[in-house]
Image 1 (tube, rainbow, N blue to C red):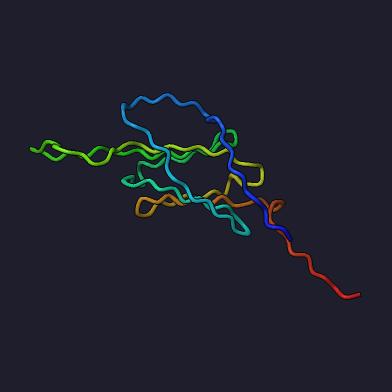
Image 2: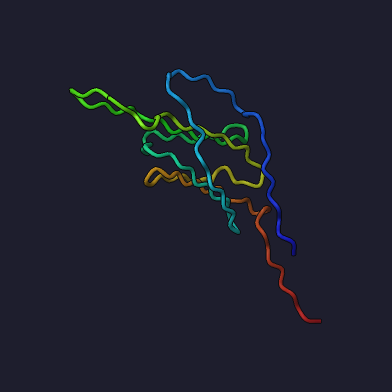
Amino acid sequence: MAEKEIQKREASSPVETERTKSMKVFIPRVDIHETKDAIVLLADMPGVDEKNVHVTLEKSVLTVLGEIEPVSVKDRKLAYEEYEIGDFERSFTLSDEIDPDRIEATLKNGVLRLVLPKTEAARAKKIPVKTA
């Protein structure tokens, strides 16, 4: 059986958002793995904690938003900064092969793990072969 080839395609953002914070927004890097029963997304969002992660699903568009709370130290002024901080946001358009009621999200050490379970109809089924 030939292996399925995955093609990357560029698409415009399915959801237009208007930001009310004057902070940079980064697109988190995401690894996507497919198992027999689900599609798993691993999104890097360093510095984001679980209370500031928002995962929404609207009209087949899954949106991940991780908000950063800027840290300031009393009686100190930033003299030099080697990296920029900002929020993380990314959207994915889901097919009807994903069961939206069973999506799970966990965050550990700045990595958001989303498990997108496949519907029964989309799961691969093994068909037993019998001798005649």
